[in-house]
Length: 236
Picture 1: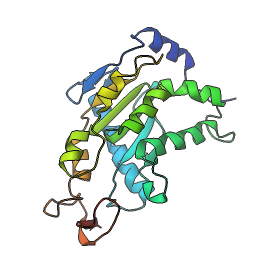
Picture 2: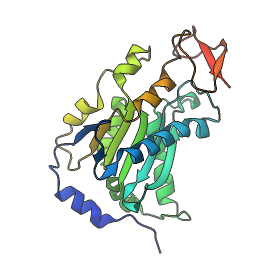
Picture 3: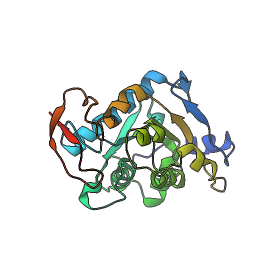
Picture 4: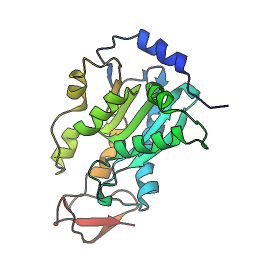
């Protein structure tokens, strides 16, 4: 028997909100969608961990990580998959969020996996799932999340913070992009700034050698990459 998500719950959620809008919250919201902030923090830390697990380095340069969670499973929720930035593979679309969506698509439709969904069932299942990412999605990733009809997008570090720290960004916030998606027949709740005091440190050091490395890492030799050639890498 296939293990499927609660598709009836999808219809309930869709019926209870304005389908042309989205709900906006932030890290100060103690409970959003019935989920305590402590649970949000738990999964944001898992998004941070995804970078280390998938990147196979404790001190990654592009430390963008995501996890996709099924909160209809009860308790803390169920981890469906994770993803980490992998543009170094040569695929410029593999930001953490896109990598996670790709991984989840494969897991959900694996005929020998725990879910064994058809493509059509997997399309509907996104409406039950929450995507946690340790930095605000770029417009490409935010668009994919809205097109997918995810139940929630939860992020930590903001695009504004990334820009101030030297990261090249397309300065369009997820909130603004979501506001343009009025023709879509789904709704995605947006929660921002969750655990940003912990996620910010992952993006604070790359372009300023005076800033500390993440905990457990130290400055090393100069590295060259497509973003900069004048920064010392952090390593274990």
